[in-house]
Length: 340
Image (tube, rainbow, N blue to C red):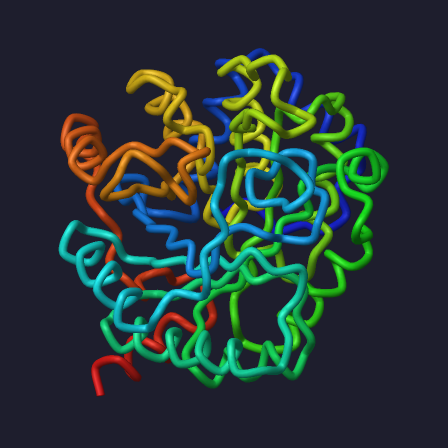
């Protein structure tokens, strides 16, 4: 019988899971993973920065904030043809989802948003799942993206509500949850997770997972990011996160949200092949890959397509095809739309 989907996890219950002896925790998470997913499949995603830098937010970890001197040069919104070219190469390399990221505080109803909607249509027509991360979003904007074929919208909660206030002051935790709620009013799937290594306590990490597990339904995608320290940001001198902490977070997320994809995202380049394999065993079934050595900007390293293809070959894993997730509500609809 599949593990039950719950939304009422107490913090004590979550802590008891997280603090299990590590091998017991991984074993339990691996069993849950196999109940809900094909454990031999891995989704490979590609992130494209369609508008880089000059963001007005003050997120203390971010290379793209205009408040910090990080060496990132602002770039205008990318042309659709360039986005489709990059997406086409990604598809040829085994990528099944492309995420379009813009360094905006919120989406505005203007010509630039019109261009992003057109990009979503174009990449979807290539036969790829499309995710967007554009900042805060209204319900009407979410519906426009839905009509364009958007598969997922990413909006991370980052950490606990209490700790969030120490790393971001230009928007509130409630703002984050409101955007997720607006997306939930459509059939677009939700991608929401957080970052570890910000200087938070373990309880902050667990409260973050409690928040995500309380979303109804659970986010279809839960990214677990490891802080990529960026020179010029307030968190540049933070200590590295031990790999054991990463494995515990992935395993706990897998148990709390059994049907969700758990993504090993930013910071994966810091992990060797053995460490990544343990993360996959603990329930991570999605990664970001790149044709360059960077994930989003030159501040965030990423493994390459070739390196990831070799890793998956060694581990006996195969790439999950686009629109092939039985746990996502739009998968069949969008697959039929692309086929038509």
